[in-house]
Structure formats: structure tokens, C-alpha cells
Amino acid sequence: MAKVDVLIIGAGTAGEYAAGTAKQYTDSIAMIERGPVGGDCIFHACIPTKALVHAARAYKKMKTTDFFGLPTLSTAAEYTKVKAFKDRIISGIATGRDERWIRQGIQLFRGNASFVSPNEVKVADEVIKADKIIITTGSMPAVPPIPGLKETGYITNIEALELEHVPERLAIIGGGPIGVEFAQVFAAFGSKITIYEALDRILIGEDEEISRAVLGFFEKQRISVSTSVAVGGVESTSSGKLLITKSQNGQEKRTEHDSILVATGR
Image 1 (cartoon, one colour):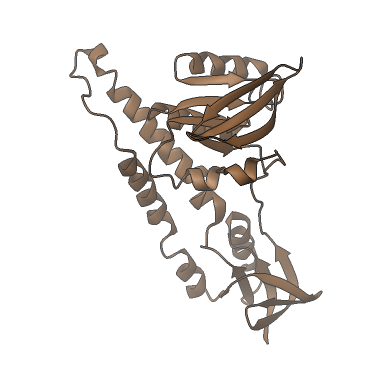
Image 2: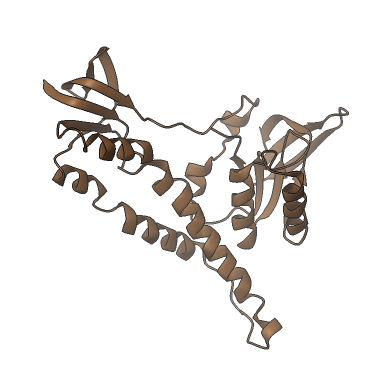
């Protein structure tokens, strides 16, 4: 049995911050992590999405160089190379992250954690006893219980970042920051996007002026927005996925897409 002063479950952003803070008071620290050290911000959120945003912005500028009297882009982007760029950015930040903590004297255990007592946690075949235990396990994408969604198949932000090709017709369920960001990225590389939002406007957490401004930008891109609609079901077809929506006045609409991105929060 290993014994430490502080045990941290989860080595993402919060877990790493907790480890750095605890290191100021004790050298007896351990972390448990089942995935790569660094968490969502490095692998599934902030950094990879911003890398794709920068690539999309550069690509759009390249297609409008004739405005400056410069040669226009004559070839379409290869999204596999864009993803490779994103992966290089992540690798540069993530590589060696676990070794750096180990060099500082912090023990790192790999696997799923489960409590066996208030001060004891089991991971794999090891039991770790700690005076203080900090849980920093983060969250997972929230997936609404839409009939047929699981059976038909969907992606979240995690899988969306690993796509090798952009979907030709992409439905995004959820008009919050995640859905809006992915809409702009994939639209820049050729996807026909439809955002479905249950509330009366996208980006409901922001001022109404911001929502209106973003809609104005979307009108210039291949991004359609349906607000005040509920997704009532999903069905498989021979050529895609059929999304069934219902407006507040009860009007039902069926629209076919190639892929469905669930971006309804965490």
C-alpha cells in the first residue's frame, strides 16, 4: 500500500494546478489518471479547437486574395493535413507532461480510481492511502435522450476533433459556444451546416447583440440556424441520418444529414 499526504484523482487542468499548489506544502503527492496527462483543454477543447480556428481563418483569407490583386487559391484544402497540423500543436504541448511531474517527485498511477474507504483509493492492483484526497475528474459531454440518436450514431467534440474528413452535411444539436465554434470551422472547409437550438437564439449566455452579430456572419457562410426547435428523433436512411424536429407551433420537419454533432453542454 502506498501512502501520501495528498492524492489527486484526475490529471487534467485542475489536477495539475492542484498538484502544483500542493507541492508548495508537501513532497508527498500522488496523481491518478486513466488517460493522457493534461486533460480536455489540451486534447479535446481549447487548444485543438483554436488550432482549427486559426487554420480555417487562414484558409478563408487565402480564398479572397484576389481582393488585393493577388493570385487566388486554385486547390481545395486537404482536411487530413489540417488535422495533422492540429495534432502537431497538441503533441508539442502534451509530450513529456507526465515525466515532468514524475521528475518533481510526484507519483503517477495509471487507471480508474475507486474508493475503498474515506482515505483509501484503489487503482489497478494498488491501494493508495492519503490524508487528503482531491477529486478533479472534470466532466463528459452531455448527450440528450433523443430517440434513435444512440442507435443512428453521433459525435461529440471529442470525436469531431479526430475526423479525417469534414462531413458534407453536418447537423449540430446545440447553439452554444461549442456548436458555434465547430460550425465555423467545418463550414470553412466545405461542410453544409445546420445548427438546431431549443432556445430562441444561439449563444444564449451572451448579449443579444452578440447572437445577432454571429447570425449575420453565418448568413455569409454555409451555416443555417433553426432556433426554438426540439429534436424529437433520429432515423437512419440509405444515404444518411434523418433528423426529426418540431417547432413551438407543432410543425414537424425532417432533414437528412451525413453526421450529427451533439454540442449540448457538459
